[in-house]
Length: 266
Ligand SMILES: NC(=O)c1ccc[n+]([C@@H]2O[C@H](COP(=O)([O-])OP(=O)(O)OC[C@H]3O[C@@H](n4cnc5c(N)ncnc54)[C@H](OP(=O)(O)O)[C@@H]3O)[C@@H](O)[C@H]2O)c1
Image 1: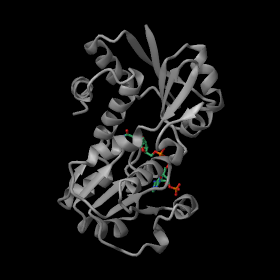
Image 2 (image 1 turned 90 degrees about the vertical axis):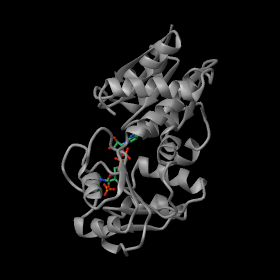
Image 3 (image 1 turned 120 degrees about the horizontal axis):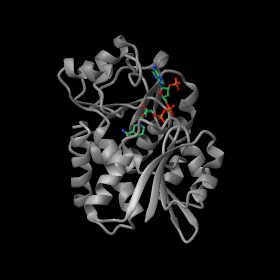
């Protein structure tokens, strides 16, 4: 039997074991996926080999450590400098980022050109770089200016709350953790409301919750969604990697969606 896990801190809330175990079972793949609390990110590799794991997902706050400790970084993860999926092959750890393509998959149904990303953390980096690779030019708006340096160096247009000049966006994405454990908006209401009033779509990466950001979007009549689809699609991509691409994406999606329904995520 092959063993898989999610590394994070905290990790007890993660739905990933449910998604992967359900699909392993339905597809007849002899494997089990569990949660492992990791406090010290520098020990990720040691823990991975200690438990003889075949693959892991890595979540907050260890994605940068996972990037640094990968033997080989594959695809967009190298540019993002953050890894959320490890797969072991012949004793070597291959690192991927499935958050970014997972997010893109989740908004493919929308028709948009101009994008505003709220927040400048790890998730914002992943989404901004992936959208740029797909030909978009997302603008970044963050509470403070410190984290905007990374984006400016890469040529993105950036704003802090203090220097934002209102523009028209089709799609507004909340990548901040505002609303995750509190009821705060990702930016002051007087700044956010005019942005949303002229937008078409609002997406929050926080999942299984109607955040204050999404509530405001709902009140203003926008099409909106939370981060459940992003979670689903990053999981499907990780599953493909974990099983060496032996199953059809549609089949994995079918079972993972079923497991989310059973867990009341849909
Ligand atoms: N759906 C999925 O599959 C999925 C995947 C990955 C992540 N996520 C979610 O994405 C969120 C962000 O994760 P991350 O790793 O990118 O976090 P991070 O690197 O810690 O970045 C957090 C960002 O949020 C901003 N922020 C925090 N609290 C705020 C507040 N009260 N008001 C305004 N801005 C605030 C910070 O601004 P400052 O720079 O000013 O501090 C920073 O830009 C988390 O909720 C995580 O659960 C979801």
